[in-house]
View 1 (cartoon, rainbow, N blue to C red):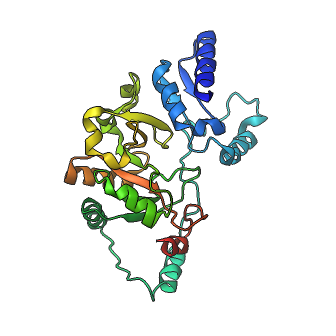
View 2 (cartoon, one colour; view 1 turned 30 degrees about the vertical axis):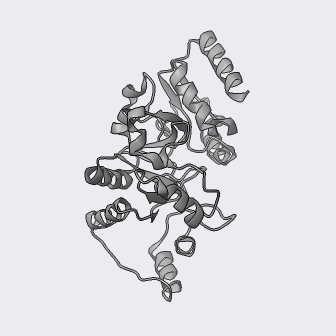
View 3 (cartoon, rainbow, N blue to C red; view 1 turned 135 degrees about the vertical axis):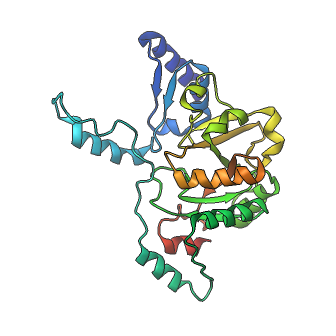
Length: 285
């Protein structure tokens, strides 16, 4: 099977090369179960999977080649000493948001809340009380995962929300699992992440690329994001990568003692992708 073949292949070349770091790309790198095994079981110090390992990442590769591909200049500046942000889509403008709310004014009420803490407190209260919210902000994600800019969020403690969101929000099969967005600094307390995870501050899956086992002592606490086999495809969130999202989850943790929220992509209309524009968002939710 694919997992066995890939594990043998990577283990062979690790032995041949003595490599201590692993970088994965290509469509197979969207297999989060395989990614989790590769990162935990083969002894690599670091495993990196870009947020766009499939065909969508070709655009990033073409850009890199145009910048660096034909250059023999040893003094070439190190422009990409870190991976590019996954948030590379269009930034909604004030004009587009105003147009969208005016278009939808017969059907919605709009409250403008400029204080960030007040907004976060409202969202946390809604999530913790069993509500489902849609979070739309900033540039959209490049790649197949919703990482907090185009996300539907809910309480991971409430198992009944799995069926509710699948049937009435996402309108899909009721058994489909959901992912947690977890504060990286607490991820090691809730998930089995391997012996090298501590060195990275447990930020092992910033792009929701890795499936890990939920620790047995925690499974009953977060049933809405724990699959039937005890696994979970998690996103680890740091304040450096996504400050607002980290503050939101931190506020939920302060209110509930659970350092994560249920996260699924913000698309609710059949056959349509994740929302892009403010009008898409209002129309979909």
